[in-house]
Image 1: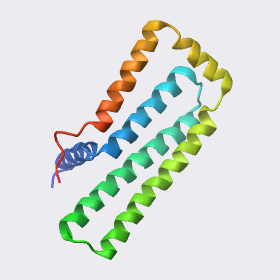
Image 2 (image 1 turned 45 degrees about the horizontal axis):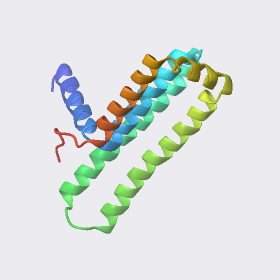
Image 3 (image 1 turned 60 degrees about the vertical axis):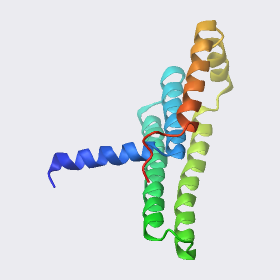
Length: 151
């Protein structure tokens, strides 16, 4: 396999992961973290590194969980206790990373003075409308079925 073909296959894998609702949810959460962090907070390099690595960890574990679930479904379409436990452990790993990501988010973003700044920023009608449009678009992106979903 050529070096560049590996990037093609990895990109295809990411596209397949995006077909999963939970991956799309985590992708939107990561986008919100990056937007609000860049717009309203003065994070240093270390804080940005922690935030980005945390987002990458959750997204990566979600992708690995999806890959394991698909492989398990292919290998054993019928109910199997070992397959169920493997899938549960994989999903649990995603949950653990998501819980710790939320804790890191609270530690980094919980600032009542910043909340007031954010509220003031979105008190301008056009910004509020754009925020609502973004929230609706994110909800549609997450919850509408993916047309490219491949099992």
